[in-house]
Image (tube, rainbow, N blue to C red):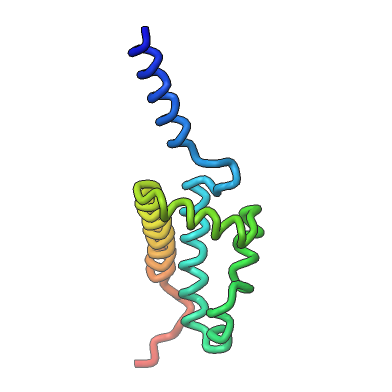
Length: 125
């Protein structure tokens, strides 16, 4: 009977420690936030007038606000997931999938637009 109780207790503790604390941003939302941060970084790098803001957290606050989180909650979540490397790896995989999906959507739009032929132009030759 002691063995069963010990096994049950070990399983319960392992399950309890595997759960994400309530104040930590869920993995799926972290991936979405990270994808948006990446896109924001790309935009800031491409726009010379915005580059001066790239080193501040001010430009990222609207993204966090959109998802309903604060910078403190985000940083606490990053710290938590860095301590749990499997979870962080999963978040990075999900982030990559989100970005690849967005890239495919954009490429489809570009291809569709490039197929449209303007028949109103005149031939100058």
